[in-house]
Every structure is written in structure tokens, then in C-alpha cells.
Image 1 (cartoon, rainbow, N blue to C red):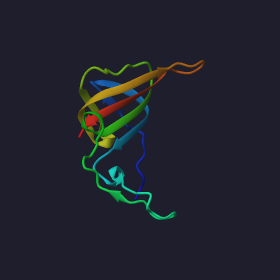
Image 2: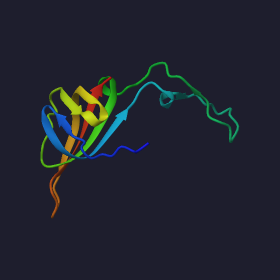
Image 3: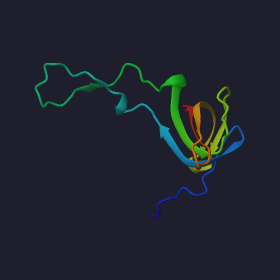
Length: 122
């Protein structure tokens, strides 16, 4: 089976299309990664740690379950005050989201580059 490539991937937030150079989609959910280490000092050296399910699951601020990191070219500043529609068809995203942070970088001899993080509630 052929491996999918990245070309043709577009990204819009609030109707503004960003000139994406890199997109990462991180989905978090209830899983073993949230188990609590309940190991005690009574375990012998070299023994395996002991884990239990947590009393509460943590999806991060505002019930976060999908986080998108975007690198892009240009000086576009995504709106950080409003919940707007985020669309990235390649990853099946067309959801209300918030931009939790962004930064712009200008360097000698380079184009202006930006990075941004978006959050979709799960």
C-alpha cells in the first residue's frame, strides 16, 4: 500500500488560509498514558513499577482532546480571542477551535515564519 504524502495539504482558521510548511495533529484520550504510578519503597531494586487507573482523567485545559501545531510562512496572526472554524481536510478536521498561542520569527535573509497551536475540544 502506498504511503500518503503531505503535498496538497491546506489549513484554514476562521476562513484565513495559512501557508503551512508543517502540521502536527496530536490526539489525546483516556488511555494507559494517564495511569498513576503507585509504586512504593517496598519494591526490590530492579522490580517493575506498579500502575493503577487514575480517579479522574485529564484532557488538559478546556477538555482538550486534539491539539494542532502549525508552522507557516508569512506574518498572519491567528485570532487568539475567538472560537473559529479550523479546516484541514487531509486530517479530517472541520471543527470549532481556539488558537492557544502563536509566534512570529523574522531573521536576516529569511522570510517571516510563524508557529501556532490550536485546540479542538473533544
